[in-house]
Length: 186
Image (cartoon, rainbow, N blue to C red; front, top):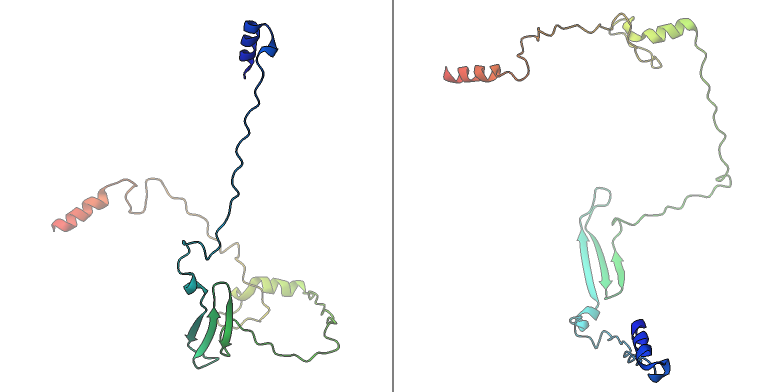
């Protein structure tokens, strides 16, 4: 019953007690849900076939390290898998070789400290010059620094004039196309 219905009934009857308020009917209880087990349901297919355990035999070629044919046999059921036989040398298995246990195995070795050698300024200049000063086919020392570029060898960028493009036509020109047509007509 809404707000305006009560106002309307109050105006018409003069009191609220003239019409008793009816309780809402209770909803019917839902039936409990139930689930079919795998034997009762028909949508699963052939359950007996799925329950059978299958034997899968796989053979693999050998490798250079382990020649010969390798084989893996496993038995697979609906929810389980069991490997019954596996050839030696088949991938995925790591052989654990027992190492002799030494009493000082956990003690770390002392760190060898290395320091940079002091180099004289003359030797440093010679290293910076590198093989450019020495002969061409003279072997350099093993600890020689890489050859650096000299300032005098660096070339200055050439300044080009906008009109001179070095024999190339400007961008957007159809001169190469015209030349190609002339070559075809010959």
